[in-house]
Image 1 (tube, one colour):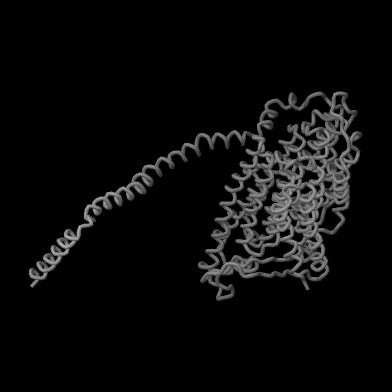
Image 2 (cartoon, rainbow, N blue to C red):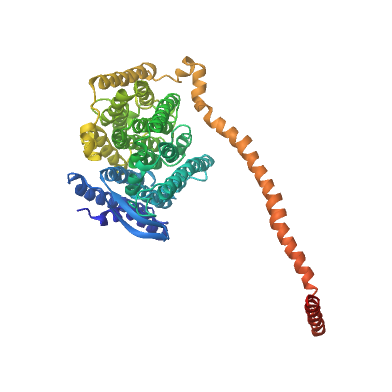
Length: 624
């Protein structure tokens, strides 16, 4: 028996924390941080209790509870929660990894005078993401989807007095609005055809086809072209939130926010929302072979392209951002190949080691007085032993080194690709080698060797920051042995693609080879990047991020803005002057003319009345 009260408490605890901080603790750093931490910990505890109820039952149940919300004739939208193994596993990631990030934030933001506002935004972010996970219908999910977009804007642009941070927040917000327009069109198209274009003999209650459980019954009755349009429009939302090609440009700039925000966005919340959405509504995509192939290739392009960009990046957080983009590409590719289990498995383990890497990077940045250029770091493994060793564990897990968690989940995706599409398999395998290359570059340059004489004196972070690192490092090591696929999709365990020795050996060779090559190039800690002179024009191409930002900037400046100005002029001429002003002018002139008839003289009104009587008499006589 599932206790739905736990789900409601898990959902609203961060929201209550946000309200309490906003009303009472905006002047107290300690109270605001403790309130935010308490809110997310309550959600985590409730999620653990729900997990015990869901995972302890065979077969695992899928249950939901709804409360009346919006009701019109022919349209009923409830506010509800849908609980199944997929939702609970995602909720464990959001609240578990989120709790570690919240606790870490207390130490990281200790000196920031605006930290109470930060924790209020952080709690709103957690509430929004939990809402996405638990939503049982598309309308509710879309509202929380937009709340996540708002929360990310507030957190990315948290240091709004810095122009680059403000611009990054706006960029993330606008790119996601563009993608979410397509997502919204997909929702409305699916609803319209399921309500009015499909005959289901009354099996679906009218007005309730926003529910995921109802839509699963509607989908088999739709034509494949129509369903393909719905699927690709919904995928637009995934492309935005999970930063897939060609809307990947906002995620590296999101590094302008505080490092805990980067960890939360990249590991457990915002970018994971798109992958979770694909897995949640995979019943829409399952019969769509062509649409799934589009999804798979977009994921593969994103994975490979962004891995190459990380090779020439010098900012420690941006390297990790490109790494996130690449790993998200893996997940999307897995879903496109028909593997929601493999995609969600990698999402879960990725949350462990990517949160670890970002929080370790934050520890480095704080120790070096907010220095982020890896070429101005050296010997950090000796100066920051806890941060350095946990960063190394996260690096090896990301590279897919046996037996760390990344090895198991990444190779599940590669095994899936090997059985479905040889080309995508080799793209994924080559990307694994590139991952080891750029992460090895980061580690050898920043952490290896002796500290330079001119380097900033670095000291290990306080326990409130290092303890979450140790916790996440443990998860990064043992995450592959926790039986995550079994909990995610217990009914599919018999059909899971088995990890072949060839795939495991090949991916391991590429991963180790990438680390070896990176050591040969950067192990001696050169004063500048030797790759710059070795790859010639490719370095410029990569440094300019394949010119996506330049092309988009040109489009905005020379296409969108002129077009907007033309529309503005048309609005002023046709609507304001001829329309609004024209109508108001006509009304004013009519009023002025009628005003002369209002003299206030009784004799004048009597004369008008008499003339009216005479006129009526004349009409009657002429009609006889």
